[in-house]
Length: 387
Image 1 (cartoon, helix red, strand yellow):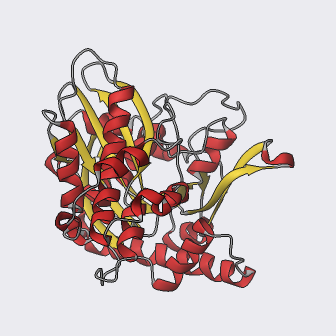
Image 2 (spheres, helix red, strand yellow):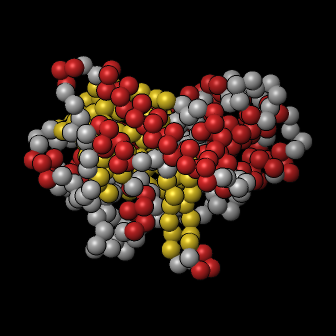
Image 3 (tube, helix red, strand yellow):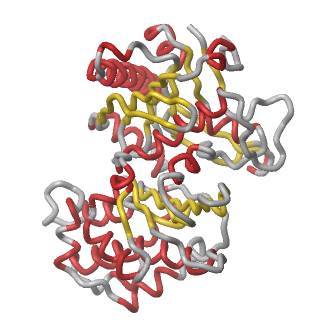
């Protein structure tokens, strides 16, 4: 095993990366097979594997509840996810043309089961617990694996976030001027980039994404699928303006940036008294509108540039909720709301893509911006594991 990038990778003029990224319950396991040369990329193949029900149930229990989980369940989950990573990787590689060749390395973003403060009085340090065996992946594929991004961010003095710059800037070079990028997964996260000056203006979580929308829909007996497909149920209801205003004044939502959220911190909003008199459809519409309003309110408070942004580019699972996009369009008015699909980026694969581009920039020797408190003994990007 090695903690530094294999030296031969830096010597290559172009590299092929297999990105395996596992996120929240709805994101499942996303895999991209990329070709990268300088700041240009090509997606050879991609795949998505939803979590099996037992895996999803265990992840949900570990993230959202205090229910005890057996050590045997954790062992099973570690083994099962490792096998699913490998299955997804092989499936994605099998889809790519044979002439492309094998990847040069693997980027593995493992799901986080827990992240928070540890030590006496829960104030001394922050840590995270992930699941999946990167050494088994490395040996099975015969490739170097780079992983543990959040943990290295913590060790280097950060708050535990994925490294996404300069990957985000590389993507933004397909646009003009200043643009807003919002990834709506379980949590919504905004990135503001000025393409002309090649600067990251701001990056922060803004509030809930689909997490409370999905939970609200699952509570509705008329929602057989357990989520609001395409926002069809929401489109039948009406968002309650008074309740929406109350919910949007939640203490976390009004905090200044930069800030970071975990999905479970928004669950209490679903039990707010203002929602109780509403029908199930109107409640869902109000909760969906809250995701859009929290994004817009964040932009209105935090955006300080002289000229308005060119566009709001949306990615993540929220892109499929057409009612949510309508709420966003109504909020942002003259600023067009667009899917990153228009930039030839799969809407549900933007995070794996910018992670892969960032890692490759790091391998090529580019200096990456880092948070204050970087520890000189810790390589800021991640940990390498070789077969």
